[in-house]
Amino acid sequence: MMIWIDKLRRDHALAPDEYRQLLATTDTDAVEYLHRQAREVALRQFGHDIYIRGLIEVGNRCRNNCYYCGIRAANMSVARYELTKEQILTSCREGYKLGFRTFVLQGGEKSGSYAMWEDVVSEIRLAYPDCAITLSLGEMTRSEYEGLFRAGANRYLLRHETYNADHYRRLHPESMSREHRLQCLQWLKETGYQTGTGIMVGSPGQTLDHLVEDICFIRRFQPQMIGIGPFIPQHDTPFRDCRPGSADLTLRLLSIFRLMFPSVLIPATTALSTLLPDGKARGILAGANVVMPNLSPAAYRSSYALYDNKAAMGTEAAEGLALLKQELDKIGYRISTARGDFK
Ligand code: SAM
Image (tube, rainbow, N blue to C red; front, side, top):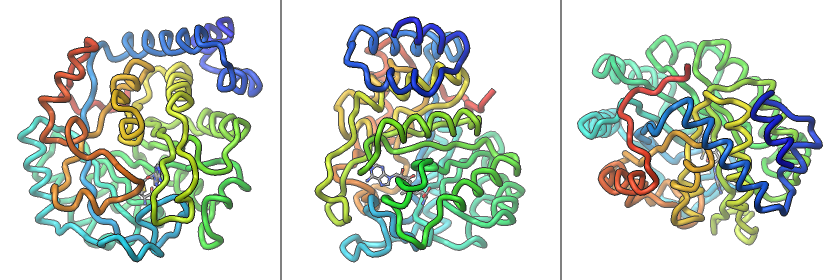
């Protein structure tokens, strides 16, 4: 096992079956070695700096019905909201004062309109020329992606969720298409965005072979950002009774991606912190180099209910940066207020 981990660090790739065995192993020394190697690679690349991104959850109206997601269109129990341009700009202003130099606008796919996003992105670009604007607004047309890029957006997060066609169908209704999502990722890259993709770990029906397919897809795609977090059930969805994904497997994947892509930007996700109280520290010690505290107006945070018990306060909150600093301090890391582009 250790030989493969050394090979992964050296060559940044393994054969599919070797990835599979790394994911399946019960050898805890090997897993600790994997995390140590990934940590060393991240330290060489970024030192002890952890980039912060201010996450603004711009709205929870969605046209889609992903079976896992708490803001799916068919969920009648969630209070729907949509931030106004002024509320988004206020969040950016507060974030800027706190030291954020990246704003991430994420939302359901019926929150706002293209015209509104073009206007919001242009205004943020004008007001904060030194900041990066990351969008995570789902699937759009190629010309919409191009328009938002021209308006000043720099990065786009769009997890492919699962590469395997049968597994994609297990997670999404017929109205959604894996091919279209992959097409969107291609358009984003061609448009010039720093592009992020990723998966939920432990989503219902996922096997280790599916994860290996995801790893191989991500290797071919060569993203600049990778988002991986555990699946967590939400009580108003068809997957309400499913088990959450494994934090251990999430951390292994995080280390594998760090060894495959030394300079890629990988967040220690909120979902990981929701499952593990020390999830942020564990993610960083496994190779993550980004955290995304929540900058949304506090009154709306509970309505962005992707999964149950979603952490949005304390070190997950932008106003909790002092707590985050303490937590990072304990493991020898520090917050970086640099823009933190992919290099
Ligand atoms: N609509 C946009 C999209 O699809 O990319 C952005 C919003 S979507 C809610 C953001 C991410 O939340 C998804 O990519 C998915 O991986 C994650 N997510 C949704 N439901 C989840 C759950 N139950 N557990 C963990 N992550 C979840």
